[in-house]
Image 1 (cartoon, rainbow, N blue to C red):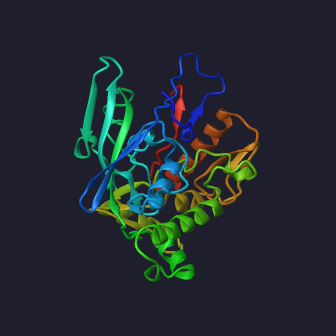
Image 2: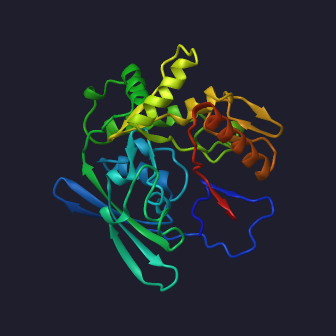
Amino acid sequence: VLGGGSNVLFSDEGFNGLVCRIELQGISLVDQDDDVVVTVAAGEEWDSFVQQCITKHLAGVECLSGIPGFVGATPIQNVGAYGQDVRDSIVSVKAMNRTTLEVITFSNSDCRFGYRQSRFKAEDIDRYVITEVAFKLRKYGRPEIRYPELQKFIASTTDLNALADGEPALRSVRDAVLTLRRRKSMVVDSNDPNARSVGSFFMNPTITADRFAEVRGQWEGSGAKDEMPTYPAGDKVKLPAAWLVEQAGFPRGYRRGRVGVSQNHSLALVNYGGTTRELLDLATQIQDAVRERFGIILEREPVVIPP
């Protein structure tokens, strides 16, 4: 079952089977006091939906601008960027059981969202086809800027407080996000060779505070002068995978034959005319180096077909 295909790697041998591409269309809005519940068919393009929300003065998904793919895929791995996840606004997910053809509606809590995770990617992987997603968005809401990089960029370019609630402020955030993503080659651009990727190839690892203390001790004990960057993750600690990749010996622009690390983002593995096998071999080499250097296992983000 394929949506936009932006987070998928097919093997060099191809896939000997039937591919069903989701093309369900339709968007409906229902007012709920200060909010609007927007129900979106799974085949709608995600970034087009985000743009429509901003035009209608609806806040809640503006930081997710520029992400390629379809709406139906977003709940599967709880798509997120720049401090915003879809679980923040999803009300419900409608899906069809692939075996029984029964249509079920899952509430937000039923989806069991986590960091780049949900029941549709875990215990129920490949069990359902998502047909529509409902989001609760704020009318004339102000954007919530939580991500430090985005905060810093907007502070240097725009006075959000001077902009009216709704579209003006939301548009400013969207433009900022698109600028940052474009600088990292994280938007679809046929003229950018570094954009030939599946986006972030590895997820940011989340570890316990005790484990982090061990990792940080090893890092400082190695004579490193730079402080290890971290992000809070509840009672755990999140480490930036991009930083781990670079410290393990794979800087931006690293090349290995016909594949390599993007010149603009160390989490993107770029195909410069190589094969899927070459790309996966590079990914394995990076994972091995990070595990050897830090004792941390990086999990891959894209889906490989066949697995």
